Image 1 (cartoon, rainbow, N blue to C red):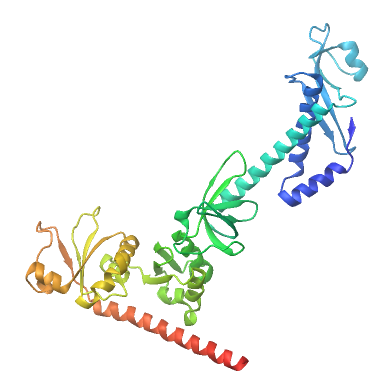
Image 2 (image 1 turned 30 degrees about the horizontal axis):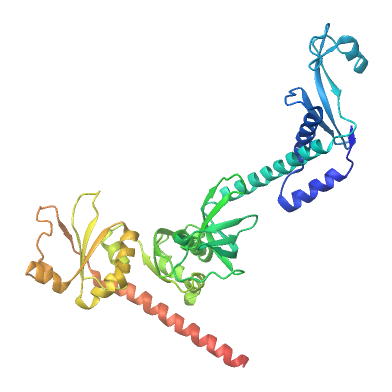
Length: 411
């Protein structure tokens, strides 16, 4: 037997503290390494009856060969005579198994090197499995990391025990990723490799917005306010549809927060990305009107009764056409992703030119008796949206004035 003493336990404690590898893994690795060293030392490739045993009480480890007790030995490597076995244990009988210590007095250099390779590989495997399991649990969640470097347009982010990769498609356009800066990223995927697991993260995923709102808005975490849908063009604009399960709680107001404090925190985290908070509605007409905001809407025409086809024609005043479409079609594109409806936007003048009549008497757009115009009172809905936006602007102005007053007093 080889005396190890307290050295093994000290090494186990250090590895568990630094890399999270348990003591059982270290002891198992050491036993396997000792068996591999024995095979190298004895110049044998197969030895199924050879095992290493560690005695925790004495701190000793040794190599043992398991042999079957027989009357006549035909295979000395696998069998032992009854007389020889009784010298080890006088109570053994025929067909019993006995363990015989075969630990060499001294291992050679090659055997020692083989043992070292086995231990190193087992520790790496254990570390890889720990990291893989940890980040598989984090998949689909938000985590904080530190930017390490930029390689081939990929940003390398340290997120704890490993470095994650942020591909260019998952980066925010025109964002400068400076090494050393802290960053919140979304864990997209975890891939198992021969070395450490490869973790793919994103800084542009829409779920980042959801996670930030869940962190900043207690009503969302408690389930009172529900996020129904999110559409995002990272770095530019995001639309988020919310709904309150409590009639006494305003979903939009809860997300904005007192004096806009909650939304300002989220906007700051997203580097001043514009965020439109709209009220979700089970009525598709009202939902589309909210999604098109801040543009005013004259009417929404549902173009088909087919549930698989979701086409809607939105008519807006002439002076609201560019606002409804947005820069390079951004507003209507985000509204489409948010609602799931294909939205065609036209002005009143365009409708009059095409149909040759007033918008209030617009004919069937499909000309197949399937089109259905859904009238609604857009003024009331639009007044609510404008009132919320105006109130948010007033709150932001009040907050700015307070900051200036506090700054003046400190000076």
